[in-house]
Amino acid sequence: MTESSSAQSGTAVVDDASRPMVRIENLHRSYGTGAAAVHALRGVSFEIPRGELVALKGRSGSGKTTLLNLVGGLDTPDEGRITVDGTDLSELGENGLLELRRDRIGFIFQSFGLIPILSAAENVGVPMRLRKADPREREERVALLLALVGLADHAAQRPGELSGGQQQRVAIARALANRPKLLIADEPTGQLDAETGLAVMELLRAVVRSENVTALVATHDPQLLGLADRVLELADGEIVEA
Image (cartoon, rainbow, N blue to C red; front, side, top):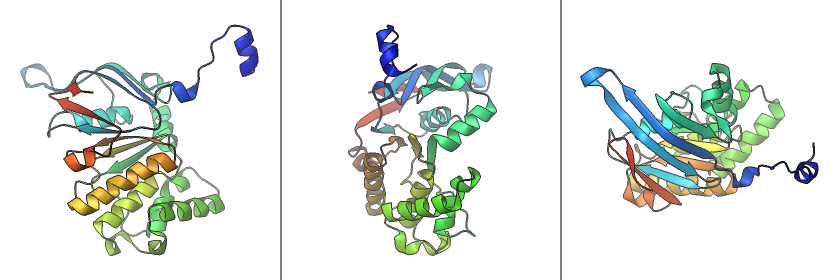
């Protein structure tokens, strides 16, 4: 059925552009049982519109990493609902979650997570190899992404030959390899000095615009928070500012 015929028959047509990229509803997550239980998240709810860079702030232990792991399908909640790009994560089995993480979500970590024996270009190409992308497509995409993050001249260098800021730029390029709809970054500037961290955060903001993606970034750096479209604050597992 075409969109026009759906409209004529009275069936509502969902516009992807108007649907939030992420919808979190009454999310709870605890670890342990009884008096020793740690309540990492307590009834968290929010939405992230498509194309926004949203910063998540909060002290250590506030629940930031737990929330990112849940949104990214790396963990499951005790209660509540997570919808990413219109997909309810609770309806996906392990294979479905794997495909979601491979095809629609890009992850950026504080520790970079690059493979030491591979060049920058080879590291960026890893997700596309896992997807069995055409080699020519892979090479063109890798070249484009390295140029996007300002590392076109460093394609053949291994992580140990790059600075921390350059390694994180490679990690950002790798996260974009499979054209994800959502980027999830956990303290991506935590191992970088202030100037380099600001440059990386500015790059993330530019990437959100140029690649038309949505980003959820956990950071505690006040200077970096100013680059976000919106800031959410977690305290004791609850959203206290939205």
